[in-house]
Length: 439
Image (cartoon, rainbow, N blue to C red; front, side, top):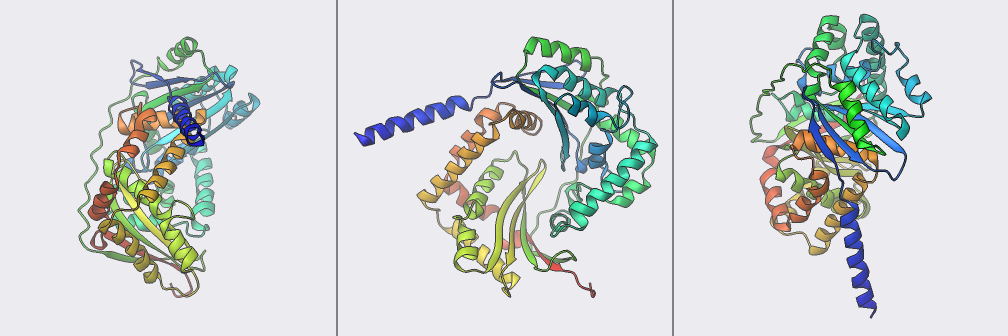
């Protein structure tokens, strides 16, 4: 009887899980090319207005890096109808919050308001697109802001330059070899005309996706979108033709130094396909197996049992054109960096040569089910996912179906993909070391 009750309860949970995860949305294009995605959820009086611009650090000129991140700041300066410095005041005085983020492939702006201020959010984003004021005062102001951010988050942050050093070794041709924040001397050398040209090229309706999610009246919101965004002129089509990387056929070793650390770190990094490739999904599952929590293989072995490391991690840094699969370790005491590499390699070889256990495989599946639930648990998360799936994958409905891809992955596939990508002759080894007066 207890077994029957348990089985019935499990069936009910699965049914509730399936129904709860279905995210309904509507999408369409304006005549100027702006893609619009609407998601109505009237359970709470909150709305998010967001715009995803398909421009990131990879779109910059080699001698003008940092532009995309710079614009993340610059486009809060003001517009023809918003006085300089008043953007945040307008948002907070109406009960809202806002922010923006930039990475290698995109820039994302958003506001979260009480739902009765949805029109304000739409007006703000239309102003950013139609009437930005890009002048020398704003450029000079944000130049200092970005420099301070770089000092705080990169230059003076322990291990703050580690990823940048890995990217430089892993990519030789593709602009992923650079950093999102860019080089400050490039920003200093840039002219006002160059900033205005960057805005004219990338901040156009046909390079953007507007998402409105939350407590909305869709017919009313559609009219607002047409009124505010419809008149904005279409921009020129953007052509991208990034160079292809040559395969890595023998191990590349490098060293980098950081004055902010006292304990070294070591990284093994492998260049892998971009996020839309099925193998990238498989590699994410391998990462979860290796370092997804304190009961994971690497943590339990190297940190807990052998006490050779303070931290270990396996990460699939999934980007649009390529990805980076990264194994990272910080040694404990006088343990050699190569010892950590050897121990991590041992676990990779096990995956390549034998199937992981059914128990471990089910644990990974459970982790991805939980991640799927969490990603769709708020209107902010839903809005970001809708824009991401449309722009990178060309399939907005992946917000409902992507979990099926993970469910379809097998232990045999994990073994096959590990054999294909995670080999010593296909990687970069970076020793990240404390800097002293001699370096």
